[in-house]
Length: 136
Image 1: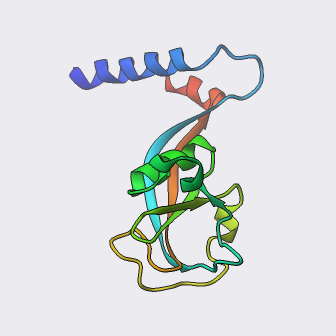
Image 2: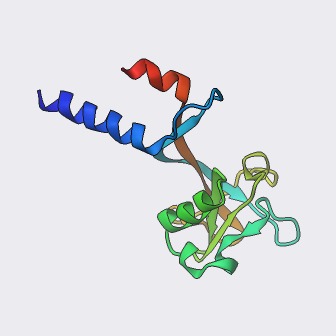
């Protein structure tokens, strides 16, 4: 019985987060964590991921969670950390470019290394507003 009431609460919450249908499909995405894509080489003169998020916000450095948060704010899905997590990289095209210098080694504790990115992908489960109606 308790699981049913939680399901109803979740549905009501989703209804409140979404505007009423305008005839166009609406996309609802729910965070599902992140996945490691491995350790990848980088190059100072030709970055695999073009945006240094830590240059814009110091709170983007220090952990996978912090770098992921800054990446999500940009609506991007792939990011990487270097130098024990002190640098956070991403970009609008990072999903296509993160491995352009090949796989590397020497990433420490999931926080990268010297010109090595520990790369992650943000996972999401997305559904359209039309699919949402089927939950009833």
